[in-house]
Length: 182
Image (cartoon, rainbow, N blue to C red; front, side):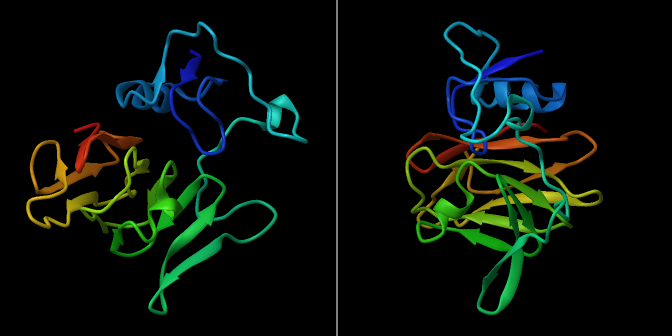
């Protein structure tokens, strides 16, 4: 199946036609990040790349041609960056100061860690996530004055790989997010 992006997917801009694996496409459509209506869509090729190399790929623990860049905070490694993917290698809080690092990216959990969303995230903030091979990917609300909400509550939402090859955290209103999957 082919989809038309309604939001950025890694470096690929909205309006682009994209063919991915069925699970990823279904997750993007369910998260309103893409549509199956291809009207007006265009094939996007990054400058200097051939059409075959323009499709985004979910990164794993290593990238051909070199190591991933490492994210650190307070001297502690929080993960690695490769193109549109970030490896989550520890508990992490996303707030206004670091939101640009994670917005629109795919977070890949290396183990059962918690990503906490602060109440000061920008409008339209969101990311996709891939749970760890064992354990859960946890998304938590910082619960600052009851915000932000995740699926209508200030709780922790978990996703396991068995039922969610890919899920999305999607901005729906000021300090309100939905988390796709179950």
